[in-house]
Image (cartoon, rainbow, N blue to C red; front, side, top):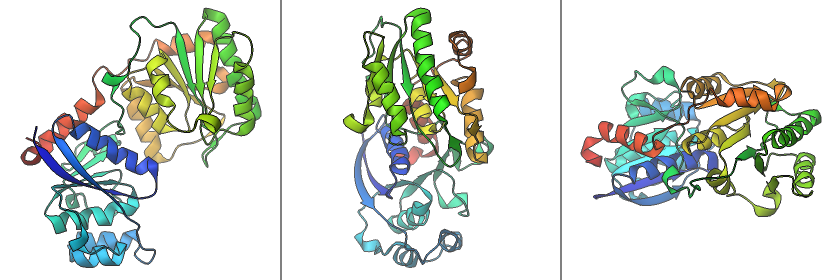
Length: 335
């Protein structure tokens, strides 16, 4: 395979640069990538709307990089492709690509920047499907389902991924208890074993609730406590679980379970809402029958069984799907 030089621009948000890393993982299905990872920070006195106006007007690259990020163009690593995600990287993405004479890919919403500033915009919103520079996709991630060492004849195992409160999601103590009761009810109904993981957002009392439940006699429950084990626990769940239930505050966890080709049910509290963009993404996932959503207060073994019957896991490898479409857009670089 040919090798291409890639400049990966990252901010300080893992949720952003993991998306860009997912695109690179897809590219590596087709080409070798030599990646230079560069941490950038947008200057507070250079707001995004100013950088967008400059980019749209094709302002000098040196001015954009220096004003917006304190970067000298001559300090950029040589690259044939610039990739980034996160709104604060938009201006640097455009200016760096122009300075280097490179193609560029941005993952996310381009806001005030004209799409023509980018070679490809990878988005999760179907309303952009007809735009020539946009490519609609499952949110990219590095996970390769082909590498999951799933047993050929696994026991019935369910994964439960616990998030927590966000500005748009609020879980009550009764709802956490109801989730714990659901775990017991499903195990009692059909013997399903549970592998449960929390996250940094999960409140301590809820984590303690599941830790205590798992510490009992052989009740078919194992709890992987983020507070002890740290990040990186999802791989084991994806390798073990036949189905996954996930609190719906995290579209990243839901997207990764879909990428792992596992049926997933999202669990919503009574108090929740989506931004218009996130609502559109959830519709995209459900319209493809990759996932379904249930209110926590409706959970029962029978409801879960009926809901699982509606879900059709992704059959293809999401990385293969993404790189195939990237290659169609960038034939000169990727062929």
